[in-house]
Length: 71
Image (cartoon, rainbow, N blue to C red; front, side):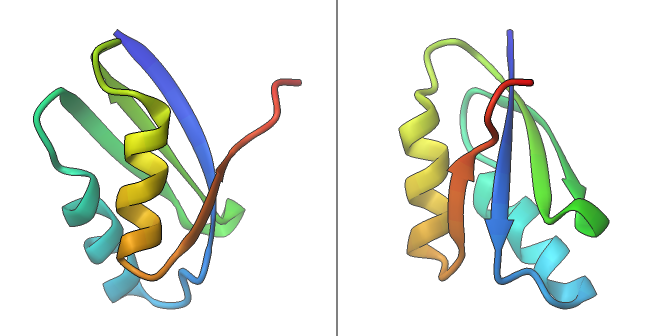
């Protein structure tokens, strides 16, 4: 299991939280936690789910997304 944190632009309301969670609910994703105040989302997923697929799903839903840089 991997955890990926993506910075997400365009989340501006509570319904965005629902939408982002729905968009990322796909096979291989175990948990999605929207960090609204940080403009990010934490995703626990199988290693078979590429980060690019998660980013593409959000972009197709109208959000700008990119992996958070490691600190």
